[in-house]
Each structure stands twice: as structure tokens, then as C-alpha cells.
Length: 99
Image 1: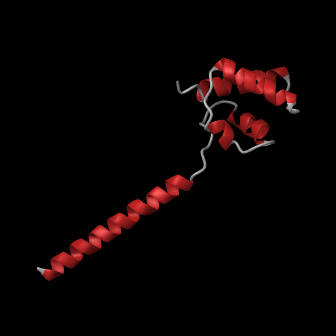
Image 2: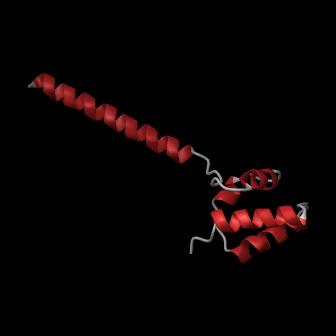
């Protein structure tokens, strides 16, 4: 009976340890951009000034993203009109507003 209690305690300890490791790993994981066309362009352009985490956690409407791109242009963002359109398309499609 005592051996079974030790086995049960050991199994619970292993299970709890595994769950805690999973929680810590997930909490420390950096948000990344969703897969999709032009993701690399968005990572390159947006990531040239700040972490893409700022982009990944901030869903917006098309108008919101358009305004953000305009704001970034004021800070020195330089993209062609075609690149701008591809970036906006990616952002509005893969990072929409959560509201």
C-alpha cells in the first residue's frame, strides 16, 4: 500500500512539473506574426524600428492600420506604394481588430 502511495506521489510530482514548465515556456514565448503572404515584408519593415511583438499584439481595423502606417511614415518609414499596399493587406487580414 505504501509503495502505491509513493508511486502516486511521484506521478503527481512529474505531472505538476510538466504543467509548470509548459506554463513558463508559454509565458516567455514571443508573439510572432501569423503565417501569410507578405509576412516577411512586414517583419522586415516593421522590425527595422521595433520588435514585431508590437505589431503582433496590436490588432486594428483597416483604417487603424492605415493610420499607423501613416504615422510610421512620419517617423521615417520608407516603402514603395506597392509595399505599403502589401503591408496593409497583410495587417488588415491577419491582425484585425479584436473588437
